[in-house]
Image (cartoon, rainbow, N blue to C red; front, side, top):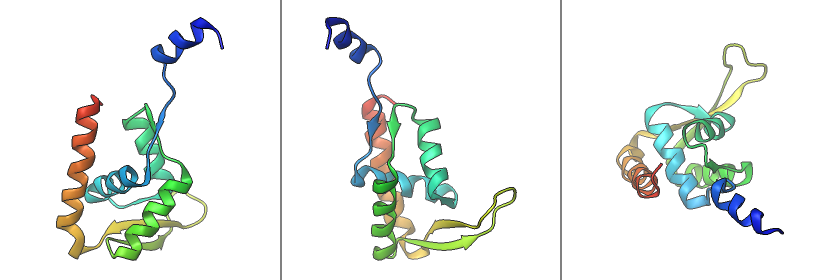
Length: 115
């Protein structure tokens, strides 16, 4: 490490990876507005919040949690211009209100962080 490495770190910090709790709220935030699949969720995060990242491991453990809770429904769908079918996710109707509440936590977190 050099002294300039410290300044470089603060001028251009590495991306922040979401933990499972944040990932869960982020996923619900997106799914309230549209159905989506795993890769698209990661790409949307990186394009809308460029200083944040979501690993496959955290993403799919959060989705598994949401499916087990009955919050999201997963189904296979063939998308135009895509090779194989994608596992799409949408919010289950009975979870709509809870999903809105949890997605608000994501929005508040991002507002506090200045993103």
